[in-house]
Each structure stands twice: as C-alpha cells, then as structure tokens.
Image 1 (tube, rainbow, N blue to C red):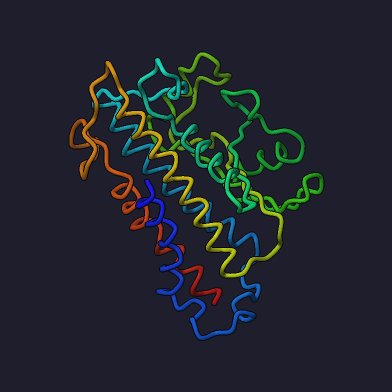
Image 2 (cartoon, rainbow, N blue to C red):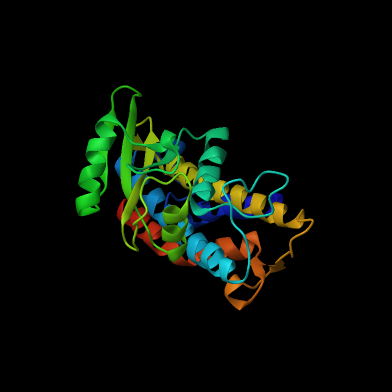
Length: 269
C-alpha cells in the first residue's frame, strides 16, 4: 500500500515539473504566488474524478458483473463478498480526503437519490435544476459554510448505473436512461485562489483517495471466503475473472486524464 500511495503522491508533483511549473531555482516566495483561481482547481479535480469514476464504473463494475463479480452497497460488511458500487467508490474517496490535511470537500447529491440524506436542498437544489438542463457546472460561494463551491453534472455513463438505480429497493425513480443527469458532484474549498503547491495538494488528495478505496476493494477480495476470488494482476475484467492492481488501475487513469491537467497547469503558468 505504501508503494502505491507514494507513486500517486509523486505523480502530480512530477507532472508540474514536466509542464514547466515552478523551477527549483525560483525563490520560496515566488513559489507561493497565487496562480490558480479556486474554480479552476475544482474543475481540474472534477475532471480527474470523471475519468476515474467512468473507468471504475465501466471497466471494473460493468465488465466485472459480466464475469460474475458482485458489487453491493453493503460491501464492507463481513458477510458480504462484493465490491463498492460507483457511488460508494466516490464516497470512499471523499472519506479519505476528509481524513487528510487538505481542506477539500466532496459529496454526491441528486433530486432522486437512493439515500434520502443525499437529496439537494435550498440553493443547490435550484442550481441543480439548471445543471440538469444545460449540464454546465455551477460555481458559487456558500455563505453559510464559508466555502467556495462547484457543482458538476454526474451522468449515467454506463448500463451498470442505470440498472442499479432503477432496480434499487429504495429508489424513487425507476426510468433512468443512459446519458441522464443522475446527480451532481459537489466540491468545496475555503480559499478563492491557490498556489502551485496547494493545487498539487488538492490533486494528490483526490488521487490518494482513489488509491485508498480501490485498495480497500482489493483487500476485501483477498478476504473472500466463499466467493471465487478474481486474480489480481495486469489483466482487467473484460479478459475474464481478473482485477488490475492499484498501480495498473491508476496508470490507466493517468493516461486518460493527465493531458487535460497538464494543459491547465501550462496555461496558468
């Protein structure tokens, strides 16, 4: 676990150097210059999240179910041998971030949530109606919490999402379709601008959260007593009853998302 976490923590630091970020010879005060608006950073981390969740939903959950793998909302219970559903994968990332030092907030809400506690209210409920129509992000300052907030459309990107929500015993909506705006991911941060160092910390906090929840899933698989254990290695569920290691999974995330992140870092330099 330590090796994987170190790999991810280093990734965005290396990315900045490769993008022509803050050179080593610059003074410490120059390195602390505010160069990113909070909206930019929240949009960057949101795109990382889109790539990661889509990969997990389609390549792990969707293809895994075809191989007989199970995914359940009670996956952490001792008597349940399964992996986390996509929404619970996100919750695991959010939980990891909360435990760390970076003041980044993350949660998923909807107007038709499976869990009633995730239903949008007040201003966010109003803004979500706009998001459902145009699928554009909404940025605002939450006066009550004193946090800069960004909401991004969360789409039904895979059959696994649609089937699970339509058939869930607690669902309040049974006609979800591919491409529907099922909810919105909400990100929050207390400052209106960030340094390079703070931006890297935000990206690393999200990446570490991804590692933590995925490793928790692999640990769960290793503890299976009655279910057939997928082989963990370099292969993916589309090839059979396999799961990629954390390194292999995160390498795929990196290949899919790093270009967009680099563009933002280079433009803002």
